[in-house]
Length: 388
Ligand SMILES: [Zn+2]
Image (tube, rainbow, N blue to C red; front, side):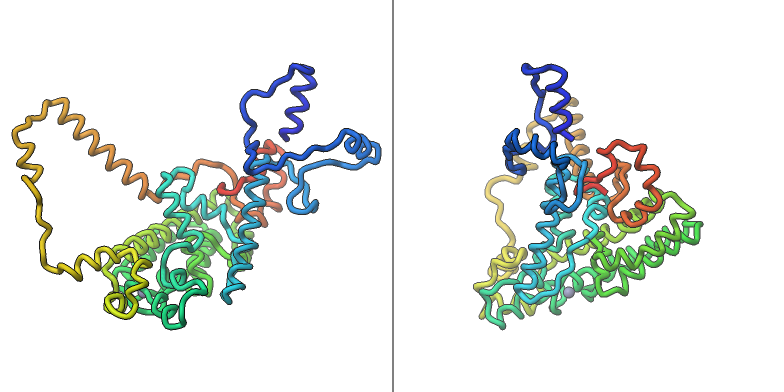
């Protein structure tokens, strides 16, 4: 599309034509400049051939922006390489066709701070340091692998599925219970049977399917998406797809709230004794794999010694300094601003702002929304990676 734009500018202004600013996607780190000799262009035109942007190896024509094209290609390349890596370490993997755009919408990635987005991405793509990931790699002995794979909360073998759906630690169970209760309350308010059926089946997949933990992270496997597809088809006859998506995103955000709380607790709980004991003895060299190691070391060395404060405590040091009314107001405003920032980071109920339909609904979109798509601009017809 930018090629067309540039051609229009040149046609309008002739040789002094200049483009203002940098076109979106014209990033030299993502795009490789290619020179096409005029002879080749002319001969292509004479042979009635078409020069165009394509996705992959000349198989699918695209009219999306370069950045969208580049992002999609990078995502597909990443997913393919991830499959290859998993096969290399003898693990199952099922990331191709995953609902990345839907996950981005449910987690409100666009509106999160960088830090909060990094947190979300780690969970969406299963990059968190749970036992399953901690024990990856060829460098460990079988005994070390087994040790590293233990859940820090309960002492059982850990994995994404374990900590999300099965960890028996009391806090984890409590978060799951509250989540399902909130979802039930939500679904009870849905009047349309076909929509409620979609939501019921979505929850059923989350609880019972072998890939159900991926429903919790909103990054569904392709198979689970196909499982739900007939229900979505049926519901799309009684509700606009955007409305149905709103319900699904609402359910997803309950799951996301729960797993956010579970992960935060998992990372802050004291190490399970079966881990802490061995880090003090035969597995001491692996201590750097645990977030809680510093706290564990402190408590192991000085379990009952309170921290000694050097000098006067701040309350006494500053007692003589009286705040002016303006300083007090500033202090209050700063505290409130801090609270707002913290809430914004943790807020999982942010309303999605983009009107685009998620790629997750692509199969039904082609049936129901093709007519409408002709009225949209090309830019709005192709959600970029990260949009839902
Ligand atoms: Zn556990």
